Length: 165
Image (cartoon, rainbow, N blue to C red; front, side, top):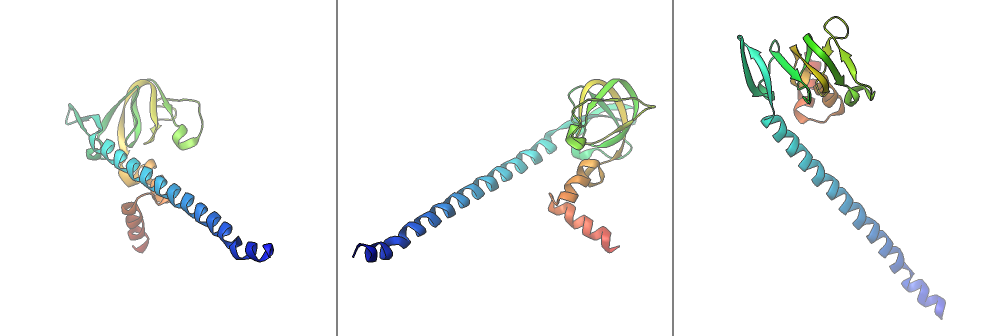
């Protein structure tokens, strides 16, 4: 008599476990989605508000990162997050943290004659200098990585357009 009662109500435990697992998965997925949404919003706000010092037509000006174009001469200094790729044309004990791209934790010394390439997404850890901007946006090192990861819908669309041509 007891076995018949257990068989009739045994499914309740299984259903309760499945329901609990489903709730945990849904809550975790929602939390991850909302954090990602907040991160993207914050990142786009930072990109819009972040200013960088540029030399244009002989004048030193501060412009939004989104307005930097190839050929600009950018002044880089301690603490800067490089918004574009470029070639170092003047440097004073410039050391860059390239760990965001290479994973290497050592700072890389940059000089005009040895290793003059400065890549977007890297941090200036010491010194200062000037670079000629060679790539911005989706054509910069960071943009290429985001495109390969499929992180931006706009980037994916432009990648498809290039393949068709």
